[in-house]
Length: 620
Image (cartoon, rainbow, N blue to C red):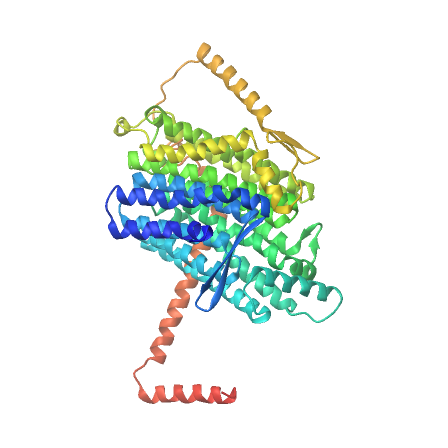
């Protein structure tokens, strides 16, 4: 009998291969949905066993190595993120995918994600990391070669960084197993505490941390390694981007948590703390704070809705990194909670974007307006996503952001607290524009015949929207599961309430007040609201002369004054910096090639002699 963990991991890939091989419309869509639904069904089925026994284990022999797979409380939660958002994205792809190619590589990347979350050794973790990366790279390559190349280069850098770190660990420990690696680093920390010689030197442990920081930072989209994400998220099937942003980015988050689990004690002893926060954790948290700010500001300056939510996704990942970096039980629970929130509302946003593009063919604000009337179902889904991302109760985004605020403030970290608060303020800025420019105001005449979401996309959006509401109204449902990771009550309360001891959030009570407020607002509106037709060219000029070159509307150049104010900082582009470095390396390599491969046989003989001399000096 095939083990259930193996089914969870490989069912999407098998379904994708068959869908690609047959490439028959309807059949490939059914196979794709089945490939995404089956792992989710098994995860739900296995929950009682994980809940009762704490884990489910399985081993698999591969090329002389034994791969370990374990479903723990934490890996089950992350796998459920992949299962729910992956299924919603696949339902979207039923409407937006074009051929078997997309089904193959989309489902291949989902297999990679499941493998990462369930792997219990570094070798299996790396293998599935590469499977996930290859699948997502091929999805981007189909739509935009330049964007895929940027993603590929950064991913290769991250992969080699991880491979070197794993190689160092294996050379010292002699095992890939998470258990053995954890024991080795824990014993190392104990030896260091009593002044005995250790397996890993201070330099080696710093190098391992730095390599993992790069590897996981690339996939999470952490500043300044985020430059691949805006183009990759924008230049692929937008239904798949719901999985790309909502699920694949969580592998980086999961990796950062593994740093704490495997080498955290050793890092803590070697480098100490800043106040109550581990120094290595503060690096993660501070980079997370910068990610929040940079992603949020750049999101506000975008004219393309795909780029807006790509940068927004980067910004929201920053909140998760801040929570992980602070390193307390509360902050890590808050980070995982926000990983769930981010997957739900950002997955929902990208399905909304997919619907808009599918129905209108438009991607820029200047071409939109008044779509709420033509796409009421999609607008209702957008309303839920907007409230959740903005952190407005009773949506799940409020609960997770509130927990991150509280966890940072409770550790007296004012700089991190200011970064988190700034990110929330910027989020309101770009969401206001998205709300009005796309859904309200005058509608361009070429959008008068726009239809609402097709049924598969509507179902996918509906799944994520319902969960955004349910986990916001009953936040304790998530908190109670997160507590099981630590084996104690970190977040107290009931299913309706989160109780930290120094603060409470009651989702049900706030929901009641929210509904009452909406009813009052509706009554006031219908009793006395006047309607004024506003022309598309209704502008504001922000103190500038009124000219067509400086025509500022909600749909065109709305934040141009902000862009001008930040022009000095915007010139400092890491994207441009990486391109310049790449060009310099390419020019240097070309110069060296011309000197080395010069067609002179005598030169080649000298090269061989030098190599042999070096080998002889090394005793080879």
